[in-house]
Length: 501
Image (cartoon, rainbow, N blue to C red; front, side):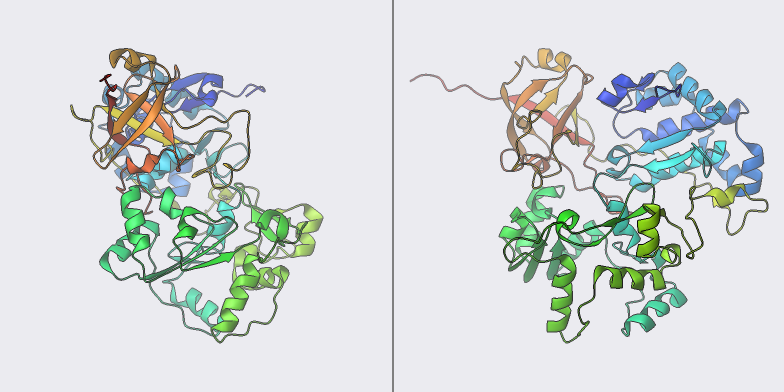
């Protein structure tokens, strides 16, 4: 930003990024599609769309144009709470910019319509041609190291390594031949689908690696009940989490970032080497060693493969990783996929093909989507919106951070606007009862001037003290399985003070 770029921050809260931005668009929680579609309509109405790019590199524009036609600036102002002039300003500046980037995090994806939220942003990039070239594109910022790498390696219910679809017969058969074993030809369950399957009695055994679902899932009552009712639960982790405490078997794992060899992939698709610096303590083992030993005890002797052996197998099966030998990763300091052979430098821009003429492969489709308000509606009984997120000093359920001190860290609070605190006659630090349609908790309030009236904020960092997700709703996106952590309806009740006898 200090080199002349213009930053628009779209966020219900006036975060530090929003305070740093040129313009803060403080939208109402869950109105992202209304905003994106209104921006698109304004761009089209002003004739600022990139017609050359649209005609050559995309499909479905007419249907998209018809969909956004009803999303006027006035409609968007009512739905989002953002002034129409600010939306118009964003639309014109984004469309006219030589280079423009859209970045998003969980504020877009932790909704019941998460995929549609993302599609609305992709549509904007296609509308303007801000994709596949220097300084322009779409960037889903990852919340933790190697989230990208997990997806790349097939930690998805419908994909094999390299994002190869499990229901594509030739792709699946390639893996079956290499592995000498049949692979189910149908996609599996995503996370919320697994919990639904537990509820139906179809999923009776679960193997959890590096997660703490007892405390991280929306609707904690249900998560505890279902995980506690399994016939068999295995947890592999470097911490004895609350999930591990109820497991039948706990497999102590190494810290992959310091106690194991391997690779890591960041948000720009750059694969880099990770090198072992320490031996794991006690009986902890590298994840690879644990999985290989489990396979051996189940009748499959895989020998003693190294991390490089496993990586070379990945390269032999995933075309986008084929050219990334350990030698090249060392020499180049990392390579961005796709990298198809050992003479390929790696693709700097993921969708650069869209600028070739003619476009190789399939053109990029516009996918029209509609605004759909949060599932947990605001009513007279539940008039306040609770949104959740992270603080800089902590991570998720606190497993990785609670054991360490930080000068920034404070306990959990219900952050509330000064206007709401005054309306409800609440003092800073006062303990209150927060009630949703699913549960209630006690927590001190913290008056936060960055919040607008009607909006409150909490984290999931201090689960042992305040179980925030006793409040949150487990309404999920059917396409991604993501729960709507960002939009809970609550009310705030003053605690009764005991009267002296």
